[in-house]
Length: 143
View 1 (cartoon, rainbow, N blue to C red):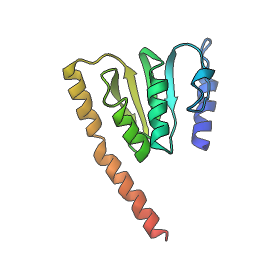
View 2 (view 1 turned 30 degrees about the vertical axis):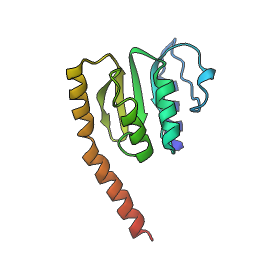
View 3 (view 1 turned 180 degrees about the vertical axis):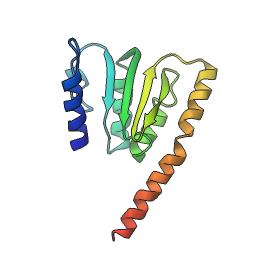
């Protein structure tokens, strides 16, 4: 969509030497060689597509690398896939979110860190529920 295109243009414009910004569809894993330092996953309309993108692409992010997810805690299929994969993994630390953009860092978490990480993510669910209710109400009013 337009938001993703705008984000890619901004990333490319601000990319430093040695940084390559590549837009690849979820099934295009073979189009990119080597490890990934920063990965941006856009909205996925289907749960299965989101799970595949997060599992396959996320595995390529280097330790200390960053994963940005647009639509996190906003789009139901993506949120479900996120919590099933990255959100419940000991290999990712939840850094936070701004609106619909969540940030995770590739790191090996201890058991205690995983508990704190889970609490931080669960704390996002009330905002997710409010967002869903607000969108549902808007749809009902527009009928």
